[in-house]
Amino acid sequence: MQGRKIRELRKNKNLTLKELAVQTGLSSSLLFQIERDLVDPTVTTFWKICGIIKAIAFRGHACDDAVFFCRILRLC
Image (cartoon, rainbow, N blue to C red):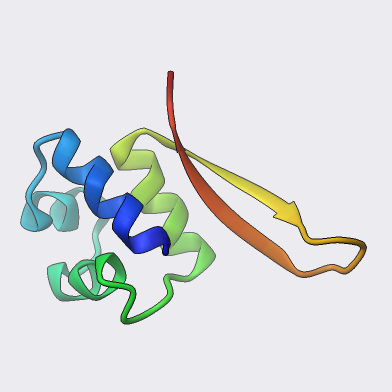
């Protein structure tokens, strides 16, 4: 789910996968897999991507348990 939003935001910033890879220090093949929801990024990887595409990553918890989730929103 988040991969599609990452891809949309990257394209809106006119960044290629290769450019995002260089800026984040991640491989373009990993970014490709993340954007297509083939793999889930680690929290560190997710924050690196959000920092480059200027997105806000929210960390919240579902109900009363300690399970955390991340959600991407555009900056206004």
